[in-house]
Each structure stands twice: as C-alpha cells, then as structure tokens.
Length: 110
Length: 111
Image 1 (tube, chains in turn brown, purple):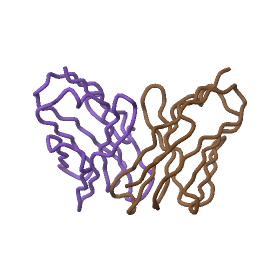
Image 2 (image 1 turned 180 degrees about the horizontal axis):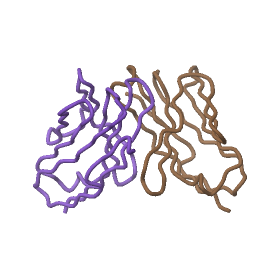
Image 3 (image 1 turned 45 degrees about the horizontal axis):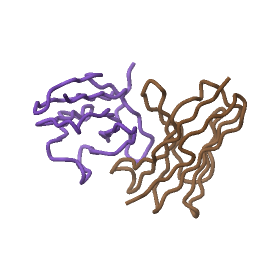
C-alpha cells in the first residue's frame, strides 16, 4: 500500500512569491498526479507525470523516480491560485484508482 | 458541455434509507471511479470500473455498490445509510492509465 506525504499542510504567501509544494511516496508508481481543489469544491487535474518535468503556464511539476519525490512550483503567485493542491499516485496502470496525499492548503494574499 | 456530471449535487436523508448517486461521462473514457472525501477533506478510492473489471477498495462496506448500465454511466447505490456515510462523493473518469476528470461532487448528509 502506498503512503503519500505532502508538505507543507498549510502555506500562506504574498502575491508574486515563488511557491513550492512537496510530495513523497513510499513504493513504486506508474504515475503521479497533481490536482487542484477550488474553494467551491471542484477538483481539476493539473499534471500527470511519470518522469522528468512538465510546465503549464505558471505551474511546473517535477518528479524524481529514484527518490520517490515530486514538487509542484507556482511562479509569480496570484490570489486566484489560492486552493488546496493534492498529490496523488497511481499504480498498476491506474486501473485501481488514485491514492491521495492530505493536500496543501495554499493562500496567496494580495 | 459537462464532461463528468453527477446528480444530485446535494442529498440529505435519514439513517437507514437507501439512496443512489448518478454519474455520467461524455468523454468516451473506458474507466470510471468513485471517490469519497471525508470531513477532513481526505480523498479515498472506493471503486474503479471498466467494462471488464470492477476493483473494490477493501475498506468499503458492502452496503455500497456500483452499477454500470453502460460505458458512460457508473451509479453508486448505498443501502442502510449510516451517519458515517456523510461525505462528499466524487465520480471521475479516464482513459485507463491516463489523467482523470472529476465530476462536481455530491454532498451527502445523513441525519
């Protein structure tokens, strides 16, 4: 059974700051997912990655398979980035669903 | 066009009742999932299903059962509801092994 740990649990920053959220997992995976849950409750997939690095706009996700570690970075943070960011992993090709971390509650103050 | 939809959005019911939550996806995905988000906002897989296989999380009580009338639908039936079943339930879909798309969630309150 995979254990997914995220840090920090809570993060408050000022607009424009560079944000890093970390995720580690305990056993091998087929892919790692970063999700965003808005204050209204909806969940959106930001990235799915199994190696290297992906970038979408101001968001960057990296993964180190050997160290079983991933990071999500937000550049030039904005109040609209305020949300819960959730790391999740899949194994066995993803057929058995995702195993989630407890999430990082991010608040960006103007 | 809503990719993954769930009905109802809110469901309030009494202990002991039987209820269903519907999920539909119009993305043509072959795998669908049900997740439970508890009061501490922690998400956990309940079921994953494609047209060949149902995978059940061992911690899910057998009062919960998924029913798939066709590839685009995976409904969640809950019998004999208990207070501890109060949570937000999310449906999701994906091509197997790829990025998942989530429904808007159904907030279930058991009184």
